Length: 272
Image 1 (cartoon, rainbow, N blue to C red):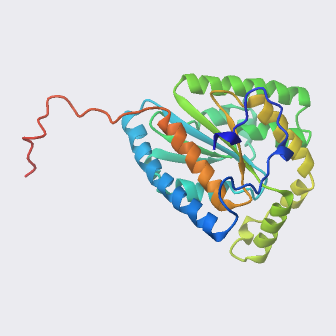
Image 2 (image 1 turned 180 degrees about the vertical axis):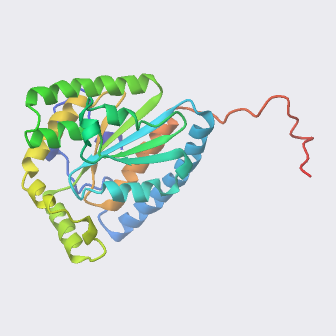
């Protein structure tokens, strides 16, 4: 799974990553079911690791989800985070900034939502929108965007030094797969609420977005806050990788169950 990480300083070319990749799992019903079973086991493991994280309250985990429209950010949250305790987990979806947020630096609204110690935070889109959509549409210059790359790295370095592990996931789908998912959204009355007339305009900018993602991921993948390029055409494989990386991030903290309160003889303790 670590093979999907982007090494610091490496120039990223998304065309070198196959969005239809399924690793060692066959593109068959058998491979799909095997991956689903392993994902279920990882989700169960996540629940125990989250409880230990909450009990210690010394570290936190921030999961950043980015990707093109229909890449599966909502689906990943619904599937992989299904076993987490909502009391110790917070999902934040970043939309267009408000007038109040625009009056401050671009990281202000993001810093407020960083998970507290003991918690898992999931960003559905994130501070990276301010160097993606803004750059593609020409709302900020390349010079401003590249300065923000450095500010983002410094921001994430601060979070890391303060005890927040950062896991950044780019959900990588093909343009053909996006077409199928948009068509499915149109065809299904239960999904039409997701439709946005701007989706087609953004799709026309596909190549510009791919280049923008390559630039920002190349510039901001670090040892402490790595990017992972997750093949996302197959939802079952996408879920497996994300669950695996979350388990690995929490295990890497090497947290132990806190000791019981001192002065209590649990062998003699009786509940009446």
